[in-house]
Length: 112
Length: 111
Image 1 (cartoon, rainbow over the protein chains, first blue to last red):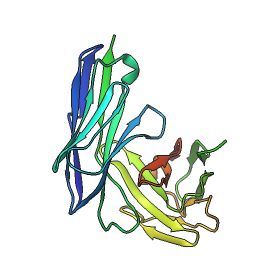
Image 2 (image 1 turned 60 degrees about the vertical axis):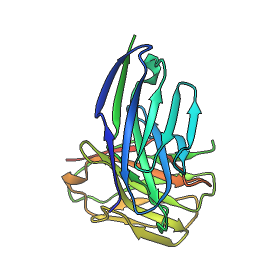
Image 3 (image 1 turned 90 degrees about the horizontal axis):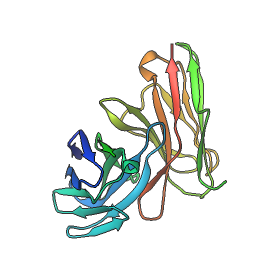
Image 4 (image 1 turned 180 degrees about the horizontal axis):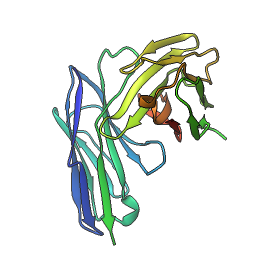
């Protein structure tokens, strides 16, 4: 069974204090790993897709990396507006229906 | 406006009533999905559709019915609402690279 575990559950940072969020996954064969941002009361917003180990993607203060067992979302010099829940999801090779399996998310709070 | 929309955004209904949540996308994406999001469970797939008239069950389909007569619409019906179906419901459609784009959600309360 495909599984996604995110850690920590919650993270509090001071503005400018860089850190990383972890997404560990178990999947028969990885087609893609997806990162989303979710603000309170809104739907998840797509950030990145990673397909193979060693791949990296960047967007503003966020950088996502991928290994064979986990992905990291690095947040460099965060600002209060980066506060949100970050979700990780995987899609397995051969998955009929293009279904994603989501982790429970990491709640990030950045204080000024 | 282009994108994916859901209606209503908020709904309160009574136990035993039928309620339909609407989802509309303007991208002509083939795949569409319905999720529910609950504290402690994250996002769980209810039903999905590969194209018009093709639907299949997800992880938690019991008590729900879907239809897809047109590519752009994917309504979700709770045939006889129960308190355990109180949740936030999200509709999504699949982009070209496997990513899913989500609607703003419907917050449903069953009393």
